Length: 351
Ligand SMILES: [Zn+2]
Ligand SMILES: [Zn+2]
Image 1 (cartoon, rainbow, N blue to C red):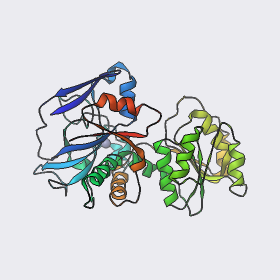
Image 2: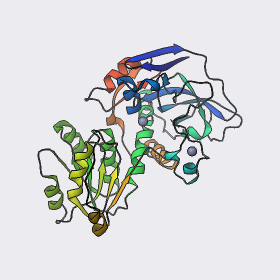
Image 3: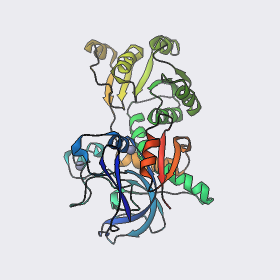
Image 4: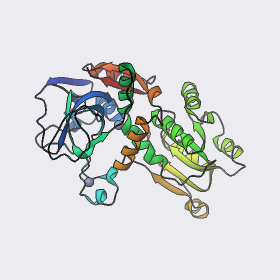
């Protein structure tokens, strides 16, 4: 079978390797669709030298070929499954506290002696049983089925956003600010709308603001041109927003959000902060206003299961975020397209 090795900046190797030999607790999956996430994009653009070689591809949907005799899964050959390929050890301090998103072994190679990386950009994947999430796609035409499977490859980003949106306690009719209308910001918008929350999108790019409105944002404003805090207060009787979800915009965006928060509001740092920089905050504001400043990183097994259920049952529509489907093995072109600001998610498809 063919697999993809990231060997250096702008360098990929599509190598012919032996198909994985199934271990008793594993599930062999024929790959159908792989999302090219920021992890793969970063490696392609250029990461520190010790990041290479790396077997990329962690957002995977495919079809079960074989189930090992000791694999604890309901999946059966022929089933369409979504794979959570980031490793979770299940035994570290954080896994045992129910915070498996923070597993200390979440970057380790899945198999001893194998190159590091989730290796989803391969024609076959031998997944651990705990990484396999069965789906329940209704029967449909071949074209419809292919696009649903491409959506299932986005279960991982959706699972990350589900975890983020569930962090702050929310009430129907609350007002939230989402910063950044990339795919992660738009997924926040969709899920917040489902929770009865009114959403303000702050995004400098006019085209992306338009997409945010299409995704269900009540308002979309330019945080560089408009007075954000005045806008938020005007939409909330003067109180400010109940929750902020930062997905992009760097330290200045976070600083700006602090001026538009109601008492009791939560600020959730979903995204990492680029450009890096300090955010100044008077601790008394946290004290007197009972603000909660928190972060959300990656997904848990719980949020992944919720994501797969929502995609399978069409409770969320991810089709608009599959910007392009590029046939494997042209991963190089796929990544070039993924790096274009005009695309949301590029999905590699397999015959
Ligand atoms: Zn991802
Ligand atoms: Zn762990």
